[in-house]
Image (cartoon, rainbow, N blue to C red):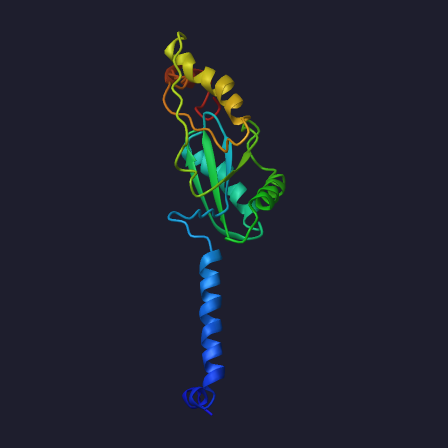
Length: 202
């Protein structure tokens, strides 16, 4: 017996069924929350490693790649990318929607502890949990001081930034501007040749 024929044969049952369907639909519509801009929070973990003085290629080969190799086995990982720049490596791990961010962060930290071949003069890696709004900072801070321009960034990096990172609810602190200390070495090739010293030896 097809549906139209059953509906005609049992009109009372059909009417009751339609009423119940409409009733449950109205109740569901009332209880389901509606947001104009719903929060979409995909778990994203970042691993940052300082390797001061290293060129981007060195950072990629000696820091980013070894870290990526260990983190490929992290459970629930959807995609991993890295950014290697002068003196710093950033590895971004994007997880599946149903992955708990805190559990993912713990798993990343454990796997990171297995990386043994990083350069001795690189800093300890830091693990941060981000969300979909992480690219939009909620606060800007401008630092003004009477210190010489070449010391401003050092003060912000070593004093101000650590204090801000310890504030509850702060996920990450970015720094822009200032001047990094730079050391330039001019080689005397004639003197090096006379003493049998090569560039790689220096």
